[in-house]
Image 1 (cartoon, one colour):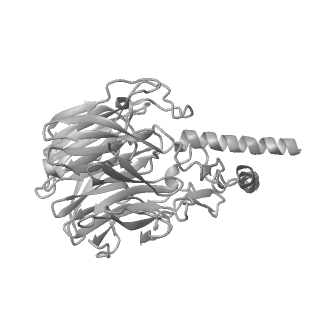
Image 2 (tube, one colour):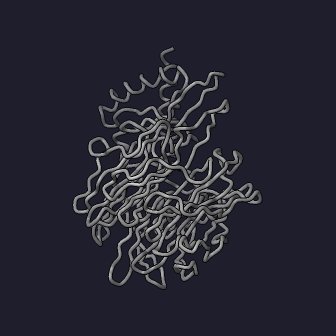
Length: 478
């Protein structure tokens, strides 16, 4: 009996480590925490073994590996822990760092509850947090200097924020008013709040002009805000989570008032979702994915919208016929008046090694340089696929990761996190985008949200979310 019990413990620990390596990515936090396979709110056997494994971990590792955190199973949605992060300028060397996280340090993930009919459901519990960052001496300690910005029942995630003039608009999915049905689904809303430059609330919590909206992001365009979001959901899709159906936008002024509401893609012929947005002084560039049946490749769509004249300079069209779902980004580079679109093409189904343990779909990064009106100017793409990868040019970009941007005299330096670790440094001018080099780092990125700023021309600072909590990385560029 004892032998069988110990065999069960070993199996659970091995499974937990394997799940961690494959699903979470190995990070430099591993000596402190090991993430196990036990489902949150799982069966009694798992709960019983969990306490014993915690004890054995303490005893056998002497604190080297720390406590085994009872977290999640392979295939679970790790966004339950944290999702969405944004740096917002706060004047001079200061920034606001805003992110969504479930409660706890490290975050506890979703809660479970039983409906009257006996159905067992789980729901996200994120609140929105913030911390002031001084680029002269950046420090974020979620256990000490993180404050709640928005706290409501159920989840407010993923957060997206933008600064226009002296106003900051924060938008998020909000489940606090959802009425969960017998199939464990409720109606969420895309909501927003307006704050002043010191993050004092200016408006109450408001809802975009479409019921059941989700996946919203915001950008400042001049003195206005453009929120883009999805609406509707189809359970069947390329993964276990399904797809969206339609894309809309709202234009909001500095008094939190709705100025315009537009349909971007809203018809039964296509399934469009996860819209992103970046803004110049005049225009908003929108970027989103379109479902392609029976494949992990999506169509990458884009459009350019003028919120003052309420017109599309560039009507919705395909910018790439091959993008890996959720692996894309759009930025506006103000000093050269250019938009920068990045993402991953999905290559052949090869095995890409992550310390020998993580099977991945091989991907190739790409970057498009576009004019303010959406005209294509230049592009870069990874030149080859290899196994194992030996050159920096093969590293794909991290999902839901924004780059750090530094405007110099001759060009703009853009530093993108790449899988499985490190970053790619690009030089961008008005007419060209050029890869400079791969910048090594030992942190294995997660896909829950990452954003970065430059501290000086040789130093970048990233905040990245993980099941273990918010992590920060300082990357030195030689």
